[in-house]
Length: 388
Image (tube, rainbow, N blue to C red; front, side, top):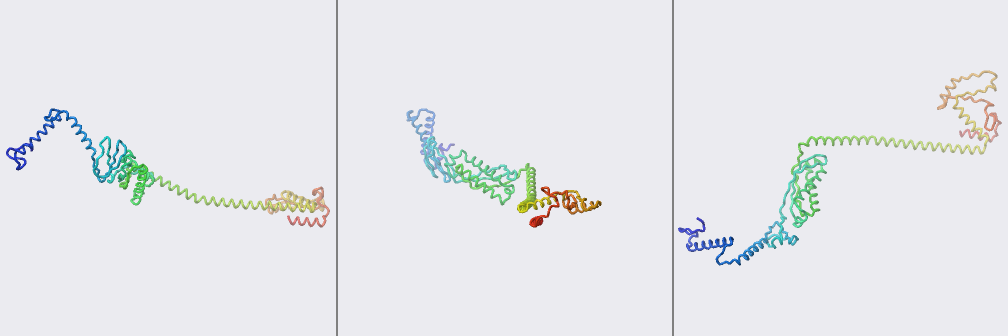
């Protein structure tokens, strides 16, 4: 039995009289019948058709206006747009705005902290591939930027987070990522880089924290990573060997260069001194020639003949004066040996200077037995020989 059907034995309303329950039930049935006729378009007693359309329009208008009521929670901010243009930002509480399509309300939660998790594969600076599991906690702080500066804030945050982590880990070694001491530094640098990139986009997102929860090396790449680490160790060994060789060879080369420079300086000083001495000797000879030309010519001639004959393997013997027709015996082999041992760089010549040899002539056709020079010429010749 339905609740609205009166029980003839007992009233459903307690001690109320039966006439009151029956009257209420009759009224409810009458309202149901009228509503059904209104919906079917049939005639209703007491209601004409001319009032049906305005009544329906009024009901629809009231329902459309009722859609403008809103309620903003304490953690939310509302952004109202009128025909797509920004109108105002509303705070928490109830309110009303012109219904759609005139005005539109967007709610943005600016207090709750959200989280995203990522599992990328990243290559480290020492050529190691690692599987990372990290999470980013964030919240929206500016409703206008969240709604109108980026197309999809959460997708943008995910791409920025993975890009920042790849950059930071790509500049770090596997030991830096695995070690518990340096891992906070990696996460801190990643946090700063993510926030910097989001601020450059005017995204209106604030990153609360970045947590690197797990770091694993993929099993298929472990042998390759061992080979890469071995190659890096070999490279480091070769670099150290090259540095050791450079440290050894460079000082030797610098010492040889310094020795060559010193030899060059000594050779330069020696050649310059010899040249200066020869020039000074020539000037002395020129001055002596101006004072005593004949004596100087004789001296130059004798010195030249001495120099030339000193390098010749000849023995000159005077057989005309004082020989008396006898054969003069000279131990040439001993003289040649003694001369060769005494002369350094000479050809071992034995020079027996003849006395009064008419075959020797002086410059100008003078004979060796020339008249005795005067005293001044003798003194000049003595000085020249002492100079020599």
